[in-house]
Image (cartoon, rainbow, N blue to C red; front, side, top):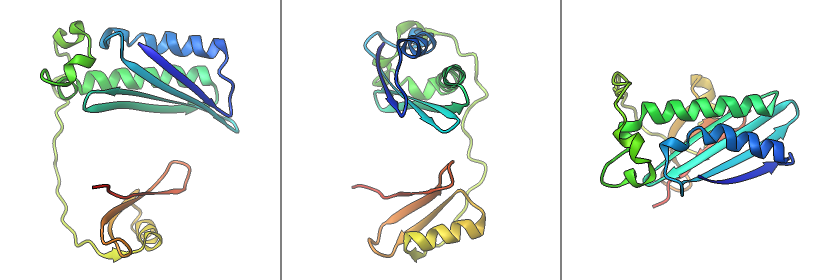
Length: 176
């Protein structure tokens, strides 16, 4: 696998680079040798955060983890990615397209997890009301939700506002 390791507010030392390559390298048997792995390490006050993105044809495998120690974060993120790959293997490996990103051994591996089918158990219908993003954030807070779908009064497009882990807000605007 090819690694792109960057650091934000942290120097990527040879020790950190080796730890990332060793831990994420455990996942090599899932992928072809030319698979790209993008790793971003960052430090904020007492939090050490790692974000790993693995683009595969038609999908993106992504995980992030933070803790007080970067090496612990690296261990945790590797476990998350492996769990994601195993859980969604049927969806990730479309033999016609995405299979080129995965190793032949992984494609032929027997299914261990079969009860992880995605099931939609509830459907909600609601009227989408025109609002500006700031109003949508207030409405989201009043409802106690983590996201809110609304019709942007300025652009006449459906948008989503969401609450981020650090307490700030994000806005998703579609591109057509």
